[in-house]
Structures are given as C-alpha cells and as structure tokens.
Length: 86
Image 1 (cartoon, rainbow, N blue to C red):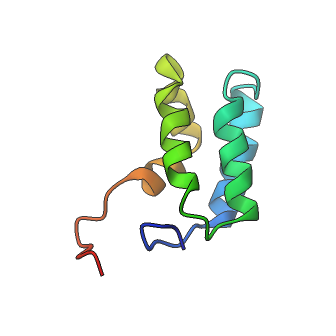
Image 2: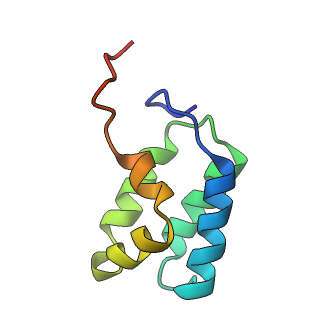
C-alpha cells in the first residue's frame, strides 16, 4: 500500500522499467527510474509518491513519453475520486 491507501502493482512497475529503459534511455529519466526501483523494494513506503511526482514534474517535454511507456505512473499519481479519507 502507499500513503494514499492504494496497492502498488510491482509487476506493472517492473514492466514499465523495462519499457522505459528500452525506448527512452535511462540517462534522461534516471530520477524516475530510481524512484520506480525503490517502489519495487518498498511498495508500502508512501513517501515515494511525492518523490515520483517531483521527478515527473522535472522531466519537462519527456513527461509524455514516460507516461506512454509507463502508464502505471499515471495510476499511482492520480487521485481516487471515491476515497473518503478513511
């Protein structure tokens, strides 16, 4: 679970890492790759979501490409409209 009370799908993160490394090159997106790898190691750590958000914000024009090859990121960072805060 993350701080937002959601499960982290580690299989989707692993697949996203493979796609990002294959099609984008890790040098340009190293901060995002590092946070995703930490999420694999510590899926319960809710402090990683703000770091992921900041890494995505810092990508600039590469945001679209990263979200194309790693759609799991959009799911991790999106708000849950049905969450009542419990």
